[in-house]
Image (cartoon, rainbow, N blue to C red; front, top):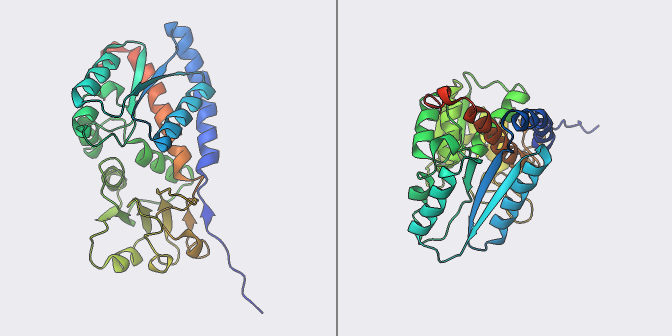
Length: 293
């Protein structure tokens, strides 16, 4: 008789994202009553990349669902770094804008890091500035990068044990791999950061209690590398609806996993909106703004 297999727990980001949005609606209503203004998330899109345009539209729709407004700033593909900096300065100075998002990636001629760091730290709801990253890494109050922070929300929601576990993060980008590694470290995990050039990658992953796929290559992490009972977080999304992990090969042996789609992606947007609401709430408390973020 064939032995039945049991699939791992699905870490359902779509459902949790909807719960977060429902919790934000009354907070936004209170903000409107107190300030007489509607919280605004400003999104900057440079160029006409269709995927980026879709992401910006999704974020705008999420704002609308919770009662916020989105201010969409579209700039031409051939814009200069100086012109983009000027657009960011305008949003920094706008008291009606509580959060600023510069959609990644920007065209090659743009100094992306310089532009990220021009965002006022109190409006850095996407957690992309060097100062914001540094404060987060030092376990100080900050808006963490939206995707990593969303992953941590998801793990907490499902009561996934992190303390004392060995986490392997595959990827080292400044807005995903590095910040999720720091967040896991702050949660008392033992963290190994790997990437596409790491030697002996399969062996390292095979020892991990928690695997985070953040390398940006479709199904780069093979299912055979992941040990029985591991927690698998797949932060990738590629054409064909696949992530960075060969998920089909691990659902019957891992303890829990994030589906693609429907796992990490919805949590990114929900976290971004939640951060903007928090920024709007803090904007009404001037005395606290000098200490946070």
